Image 1 (cartoon, helix red, strand yellow):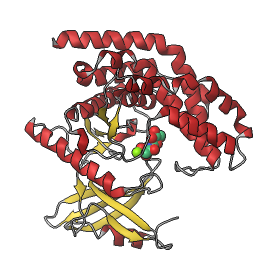
Image 2: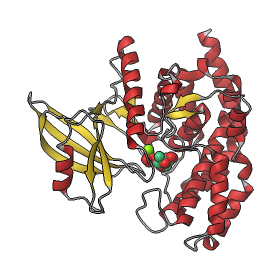
Image 3: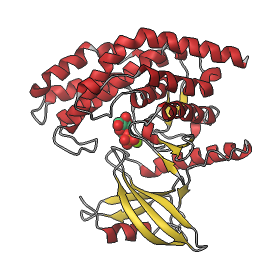
Image 4: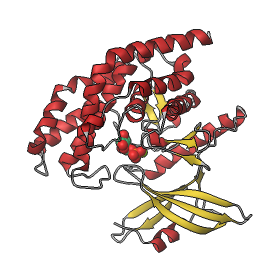
Length: 380
Ligand code: GN1
Ligand code: MG
């Protein structure tokens, strides 16, 4: 449903922003929430930008819990940033409504509640769907490593689960099998090759969850959506500024975050590239991300985490491929799509990427271990 400009202006006027709206536009990023960028002239004359987002409540069923997490996490990071006298990394801030709520609520034409939130906009920043160079990839790894490090001592009891079983890959796999069986849209037959690919690679589903369940790797506060475009970079210097999209910050494993970061930042092509010859894991970019990530996190990782970082890239790529294919089979109810077979295209893309990742695992494992050892030795 397309929202009229007057409607969105009415909604954002509920937020506590002391300025006059100059311009608003819809941003076409993210597969879940709807995002707007607005420019204001503030009462002191300064021109400032703000981000507004409509929360997708099919995905995030409890928006207030979600916002509580984000407010607590951003406050935690801001406190640490101030303590460290760090002026390089501006913090994401939730802008409250005039009646001091984290969300503006409006009713849609069916009487359903719609939830909107506002953030400061990180000034002079840019994000990339496909990184423009090696430096962006290095800095993406560093940004997510830094984020994990900032939250290493975050009180975990103070964190809500915003999506149940988000990175529970075995559950994703068993749900997928059920949905293939149900085949509500009559689409499974046409994607038999892709379904067979999933079955053949099913051993990837339980690698990380087994490590967690056997107590071999720690549970940490993790981002859980470490896509390259979730890092804001300095337009001029190319350095990372801050990590955004904190909706899925929950308890999880560092392995999913590292794996997802590589899957996203080191793929040679965008997630919906149809020419599969272009889709492969770029090893040079893999090295850059790994260097950036380990420069922040090497000292904090446990041995079993380091030993499984390579495999984690395969696991998360398998998981996302299943999610896209599952959504296609279910009739495209979860991810935003721009055309008919968009989710199927995305699934094929991830499966091609997975095949390539598998062929490079031995190299990547060795690289990770050497890089880790070097960093730990230097710091000791
Ligand atoms: C979604 O909203 P966005 O684009 O940052 C998804 C991620 C997927 C990603 C794939 C809550 O992230 O899990 O990895 O698409 N977020 C959610 O592009 O499902
Ligand atoms: Mg997201």
